[in-house]
Amino acid sequence: MACTWRIRHKLMLGMFLVVLIMALLLGGTLYGLASYRAAMGICDSKLQELDLAVKLKEEIRKLQIPSPDGGQQARVIQDRIPSIKATLDEFAHKLDESRIRGRAPDDGKKEQGFVTILDKDLQEIVLALQWETEQPIGTAWGEKRDPLRIDSPVRKKMVDLETHVSDLIGTITDVLKDRVDHTKREARRSIMLLIITGILAVLLMAGNLRFFYRWVAQPIRDLELGVSRVARGDFQHRIEIHSGD
Image 1 (tube, one colour):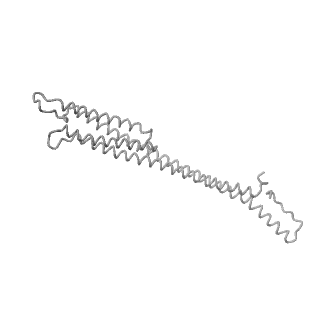
Image 2 (image 1 turned 180 degrees about the vertical axis):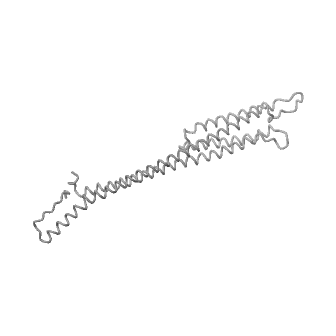
Image 3 (image 1 turned 45 degrees about the vertical axis):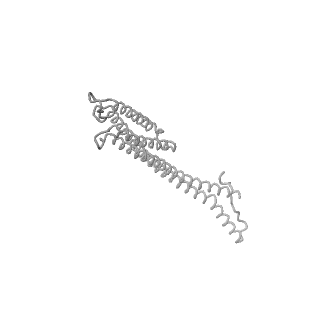
């Protein structure tokens, strides 16, 4: 029975309960901090990706800006494409970094798909632009087509490119929104966990105090009182101690 345990064993049990209480509180706190850190890490990476996606969209919009001198529009577009490609590569590199660090929900498959589509769109614009520059207009053999005209294949590819980068921005925004909602749920869960672990800690601490009083303090008090009676000459008094010590 527990009442026959030695006092040192009871103290060890009490120490175990104290450690258990601390572990419960620490576990609940660490769970909340880990959830918060993971959420903030994903949000930080996605915000950086969003900045690059917005920058990419701004670069794409520059393709449709007419050249200042009113001519050589094809050459102007060709000169602007490398900047778009560089920004797209920078975004792809950032996405790979997020995936490696585990900060890309669903392993960033949607974002990777858009990178592939945008890269293909750029290649198609280059090919369409090359075709446009090789086609003269009617009888004016030396005059070239305007790649920004409404029915131009180049213009259509530019519209597709801008649409796809807008979809990419929308995807990143959705991921951020989902992550914020997930963080709110995790925060509520963490609060509930801390409340539960706090209640359990209080109950365990109350039980531990009760245990210490009945199994340790009370036997020592009985021993002290009995020894005092014997010291006063009551040699017939029998000290009843059942701690096993």
